[in-house]
Image (cartoon, rainbow, N blue to C red; front, side, top):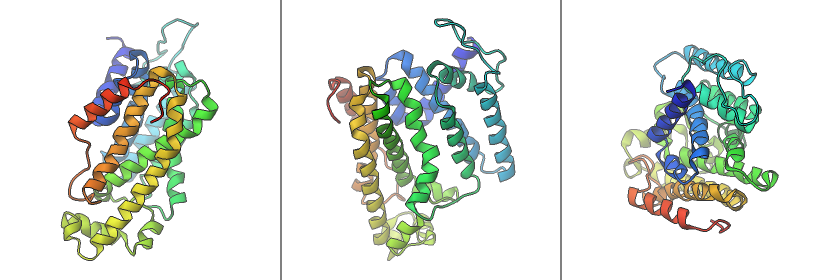
Length: 315
């Protein structure tokens, strides 16, 4: 298998293994679009794993690893790793990057002329995770999410295509924020294990809570055993669910702005990620007892319904 094809396959495998909800949604895309979405997922996932899955390494070592990997990507972005040739030719790397993911990522950037600033912002947010373990206000968190989430929407937009990219840009950003905040709500316990709290300090204070209360609920194994703080934590999580739904509402108009061949995928992702919030509600907002997941049967039903929904129908 040629390096480029092997790189796309590596990205697809990463996506299938680690991003099952989104991977299912991408099955509704045409094959030629699908591999580029896998490449962007591979890029974001690998950077995230450098930060989180190597937690036994000192911060300085992880920072160097992320910086070196970022440098390899940016070297490719300035043309040193690839060439596109005239229209219709096959992109080939001038020199094969050492990392197996990069040829696919660089090719996708080249094909769609993606905004390089989005990639720099994303990498900067990943670097923040190495030294910052909490955010005081939601505005502060949005500063982080600008790079970790909003830019994912704008990276994706050229691949998904739109008849009005300027109008679709903000809904795409909002969908990225909605997905990210959904993840933060679902993963409170896991993030605590990594030493981070993404729920803003001002929100905790609003409900009379501290990081210590969240850690105690984690240690107790759930809100029913969390004592007096349990009810306050439920109110906090309900508040964050409501905030996430505001982002989904702002993102909704963007689905029908996309090319018809892309609407089924994003419609499915919209409902599947939104369904995670429903599962959090069904669990009484207890994000410590188990990780919220949309059941498999419902996932397939959502995918089928999204595939059968005519283009142009609002979510």
